[in-house]
Amino acid sequence: MHDVIIVGGGPAGMTAALYALRNGKSALVIEKTGFGGQITHSPKVENYPGTISISGNELAEQMLDQILNQGAEIEIETVTGVEDRGSHKVVRTEEGSAFEGRTVILATGVKHRMLGLEGEEDLVGEGISFCAVCDGDFYTGKTVAVAGGGNSALQEAILLADKCAEVIMLQDLPKFTGEQRLQDVLFAKPNVRSFTNQRLTKLLTEDGVFKGVIAENRVTGEAHLVLCDGLFVAIGLIPENEPFKELAELNSYGYFDTDEQCCTKTPGVFVAGDCRSKYVRQVTTAAADGAVAALAACRYINEH
Image (cartoon, rainbow, N blue to C red):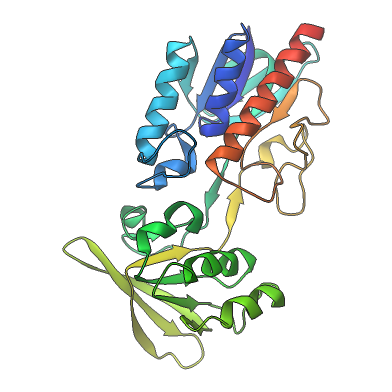
């Protein structure tokens, strides 16, 4: 029986494990792919307190080493559900395992919606980015394209327009769908160009270096070349919370509908990180959630 079982090995999950262990509790972290979550997509992280510059992979490795040094147990398996048995929970996996814990922290994260183009995965962090706050400085004085037209894409582009020589907006719908206020701010900037009805069909590279994209007009079928130094993809995030909807309320977008207390409707079950409803999704806010959820789990154990 573990004191705390954490589903997800991103910054939120690993911080939760750290805080649980530092409070004298046993912690098991179950991760289905690789530790680090979305932060591993960033070639450089320069907005993490106390660290001038570090790659996302290095930061993830340091977090993992830290919790292993504190005594964390880890399992590489895919969690399919959690059973609430009152005094304890049973976490079941696709591989057939069943782990028992007094509390569970769901730190399932999100995944970025991808364009589905050939070679896309290989270019993530090497020309393709998802976060202007994280990676925008690397494109100072350069030309970037932004795929998307909702609020997230517009917000990303506004940040990029203050750093980049040119920002090219590529929206696949007939119009931009983000708030008019954001559109007014963005399109008033002289270094922003926008195109609608644009379906991205190919990523261009030269000797493995990203060079741009080919976009096809959905109405006319005309294709044109968009040369740029980087492509920011902002076409949505996908939470993977459906297996846990009986334990924690989901909002209309599929995120855990909890506040910063990280509690759920199920006693002993907590949530942390990008998987919960929030305005800001950054490595620092994920880590903060992990600490809050772990301390809440420790209090729950101490009181029951």
